Image (cartoon, rainbow, N blue to C red; front, side):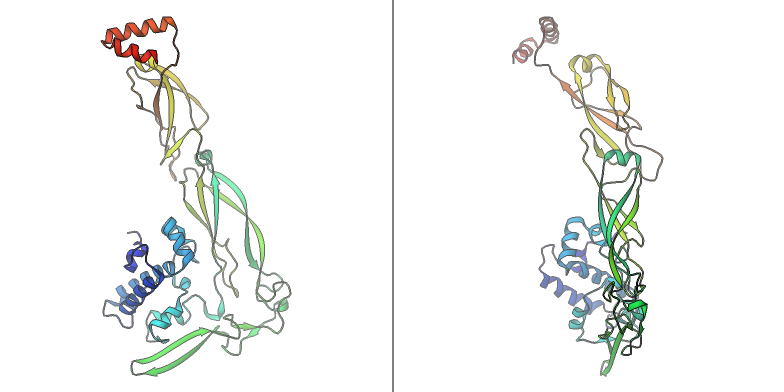
Length: 378
C-alpha cells in the first residue's frame, strides 16, 4: 500500500498556512505520542512517525515546494536514506513547545529519538547529506540504455586529518559530554521523570575536541571536491525515474557514513516519436489512392531501420496501424512495445487534368459529383 498524501495525513488543505500546519501537528502529536496515547501502542508509534514525516515536509518551505510539484518522489531525496527516518526529523523545538520542553524517558519512541537513535549517533557520528543530480537523456538512450560519467560537487572527508577536524588527526574525548555528543538533564514531576537532551555545546555533537584545528579543512573534517561518478542508465527507463547511488553524497560528520546520490532521469522530447509507456507513436502521410486501394509504404523506426508498412485498402484518416515489437524495451524485461502509426491523409493542392477527370468520374460514381467538384475547385 502506497504512502498517504501528506496533506491528508495532517488533515489540512493544500493551501493551508504554516500556522494551520503547525496547529494540526500539535493536536495529532498530543493524540499519538506513545507516552500519552490511548490507542494501541504499535499503531500509535507508526501513526506518530507518519505525521512527523508529513510535518517535516510541510513545515519546511523548500521541501513543501518540491512535494507540491513532484509528490513523494520530489522529497525522498531530501531524506538521508532516500526515505524518511527519525534521523531526518529536525523540528525538535516544536516538540519542546508541545510537551513543555520535557521529553518522557519512560521507554517510548522518545528514547529512540533523543537517546542516541535520532539524527546524531552516539559519539557524534552523523550520516552525510544526500544529493540530487538531474540528467537529460534522449529517446535513443531509452532504447539502448547508456553509461555516462558525470561530475558531482560534494564534500569528502579531509585526508589531512582523516575527517576528525583536528590538526594531523589529533583529537581528545570531550570532557563535557564524555564523548557522547549530547548532554542530558533529568527532572521529576507529578507526571513522572522527564529528560531533555541537547547537543553538547563544547564539541557541537562530535564527542571529540582538538587543541588545534586542521588547517586544510579549518576544523570541519571535510572539504569540497568534484567527484566523477559512473552512471548506468538501463534501457526502458521512464521519464522521472530516480536511481540511488549509495555513498556518493556528502561526507558524514565526525566519522559518519556518506550520504547517497539520487539521480533523476528526464527524457528529452523527440522530433518524430512520442512515447506512451513502452509504445512509440508517429504520424505517416498517406495519399488518397494509397488509403483507398491499399499500399505498402516505408517508415523509419527509432532503431533507424526502414521497414515496410502495409496500408490496408479503405484505410481511414487518423486510423492507427501497428508494427509489433518496434517500440521501446520494457524495463527489466527482454520484450519491446509496439510502434503505432497514425495515418494522416494528404490531399494534393493541385491536380493534373487527367487526375481531375479520374476524380470527377469517381465522384460521379459515388453520387457525390457536385459536392466533390466544389471541393476540387478550392
